[in-house]
Image (cartoon, rainbow over all chains, first blue to last red; front, side, top):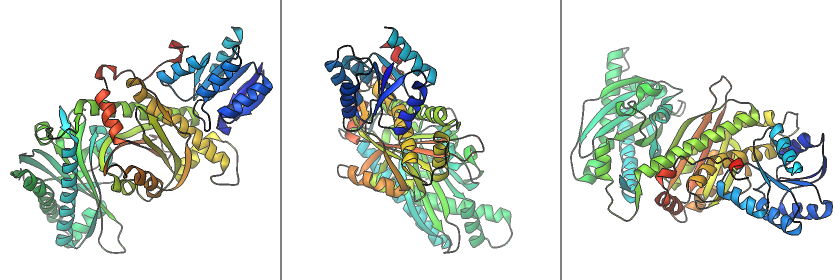
Length: 118
Length: 402
């Protein structure tokens, strides 16, 4: 699958890349919500891993824009935020999955496979 | 029980003046130069309180108070302080007289500490004869603090002193633990600035849970086994906050949070602990001590720890609390805190500070301090809105919603 990784932390992008690139293609890495929307338009990935707390534009706003542009977009929030209200906002924005940091490799792959199977 | 925040501020100021008076008594008796570092009023568990006296041997006195303000006062000197006092007052090698000198100095200083309260209350506060105490950790705690695990209101003063330029600094602490009836009577609401003590306790417990979550996140990411040793909620003059954090050098992150509850969160690792964390997150040699790779790793850890810390508040308050991306900081604790305190001092002179210390039980040296400084008006409103029956709802499983 073609995957777009969005996280303002280079450390976390490297970690996700390491987990995903064995079986999937990383088509881009975005450092904020604005870059994520641009890269989504250019690359049309199968799935987006999206952080929430980011500068310039946060992950919930970016998810909202991406799913508005493409109703079939698949976005998984990948964040340290564990607040019910922000989870609900993520659902409203169109996210289909939610992984909390710090995560295990298995939980990332499990979430990706479950969304891919839908 | 409802308490008046403005009255609490007044009592904090009285405790500060009392500590200054006690410090002057010490200077007159022994020639030891003193400076009151900080006085705050804290809500904390007996376990957290006992960590006040961990790491050094303390000696001092325990005095019972009765009358308008009943409770217990503990005045304790660290080992350098005990030696400086006993060597000045009893040069001869007489252990009993040395002990007696500590009792007398403690007695005189405690009088200085409580007399201001009595004058403010226009009432008598009687002191019992001093009981000599010596030891570490729980050995030094007031008796009322070693019974049960109810959170205690404690007036804490830390005083730094030195005998002369070449001596090591002396540290002594004064703790006043008022009994429940005195506290209720003293803090009886007089103004509109009322806060529920039960809600304050619940909020403090939520913060302890948040700190534990943050500690678990450190362990998950770095493999360093950590635990929360101290968690307290203090009312403190804003100007004293940089002094409270001190001039030791730290690395860490600063975040601003906003929403139902706004404010600042500061995560500070002492330099060796920061290095240990970075080494476990980025297992490769780099040329710079705190280059972009190291900063990025600490920022991401700060991000995850912050969420662990504030998400519980948001879930219990049924609200969103968003935080900014972390800003890397490397400086003395006081210098890191000063820009924040300058900002919050624009609207108030006292702040509530939530202070959690994360350490490791193993031989590895590791300390991390998390300081939250919520905007006071928002905290007071949040506590007003807090439903005690929601207090357990700190966590939420994404699988329940997705």
